[in-house]
Image (cartoon, rainbow, N blue to C red; front, side, top):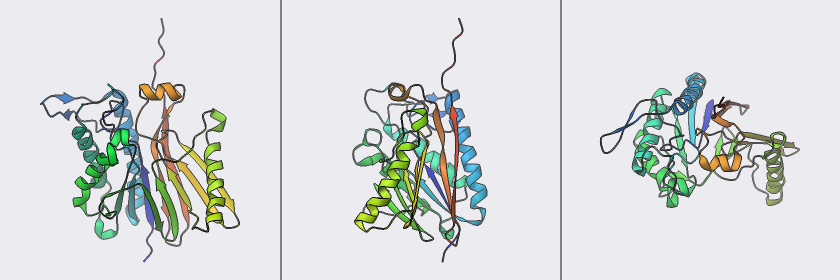
Length: 285
């Protein structure tokens, strides 16, 4: 039976980063100390709760599918010092706590068909084989809402059909232009290429192509005689690290997520909930 379905795509929380998502409460560390979230982290949390509020209202008469699209944790990589703790298990615990808060707030109910898919991310963050995402998925498996992927609970690529609408979801593989006037160009060209590639391969054309990883929102659309495809690169929940300053220092951080609603009859629409935050204060001397 088809049900009105809300699909929430959240990605790149980078929990464990001193610039990533965590709850606004002090974090108890393994050795007995505490970590206090920064002002920027509290801004990220406020934006996260704004997203959850919208989803909570939409899901009142719908089932909910949550897509955690990779890089739940920051991990220890490239000699970074911008972390809350050097214990990766504590990074994972922050991410688990966030998801448990999320599922409680949104009143997840497996008996109503609610599901949560945990996607593999970048190995420099999640470890070889994306073990951080796998550990997180196994921790929340007790909710009974995490589908198993053969012997795993994480997915490298997810082809998901909801009310006849096909989604193609993965962490990597999106495109964002580097110039202000080309931000969406890459996604427009990518989904157009995908449209014709699927025709050439004689494979099913996805209605929605979802990617993350780039920490910058982008949207692309192409409509032809055989159907329509819309593509998204989702925003993130992390402010710029030292590495991000080197590759895109002058761009503001896009913080938020994408929500797609599929009606029972297959009609669909989306809403992007994001804010673009300035991270640096002007010094007046």
